[in-house]
Amino acid sequence: MKKIAIFASGTGTNAENIVRYFANDEKIKVVLVLSNNQKAGVHARVNALGVPSFVFTREEFSEGTPIIDKLSEYEVDFIVLAGFMCFVSEPLQKAYSDRIVNIHPSLLPKFGGKGMYGIHVHEAVIKSGEKESGITIHYINEHYDEGTIIFQASCPVLPNDTPEDLAARVHALEYEYYPKVIEREMVGD
Ligand code: GAR
Image 1: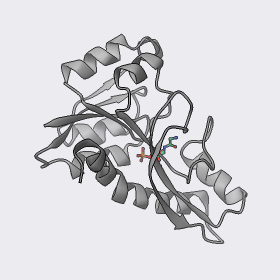
Image 2: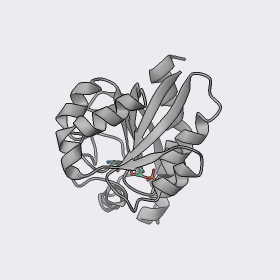
Image 3: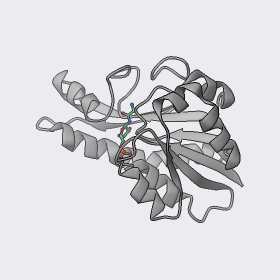
Image 4: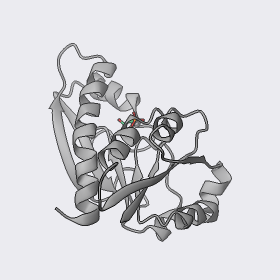
């Protein structure tokens, strides 16, 4: 059994979707969720499905060891970032080199980088008059949103879209593809 830890900062609909997708899987299991935000909706969502969640401080995150110890305790093989709004610290990147994936709600390299997260991405896409947006799944590296891209899917931006309309269309792509791409990366097709 390969084990996933999900890092999430907010509502956690992707985290919940991934937990549900692997709930009865024989090869992959989500064993814990970690968050920088005690008030994040993700805790209730995953706890209701039997997955424990933990909160860490900024200091613990940048130092790395307390997080790495927790991941070792749960024998985590692979890290999935799902709406995680912090830059992954160097000790953690080193410990899980090439085993941390992120999802970004745009077609990178467009609309990536610092300050580009969640609804801000969709606002920027609409403001710039793009006809198309989508999702990017990528391994992380030492630069925000610049690691190796492993999957992209697109959707239209419609003339009267609000950022919330576009967010909903992009979320639908995330729910459909993120678990499948994680599965492919962890155990092959
Ligand atoms: C998702 O759309 C995800 O792609 C985005 O935050 C949202 C979280 O939604 N991530 C980023 O912007 C990372 N830069 P959720 O909490 O409902 O899963």
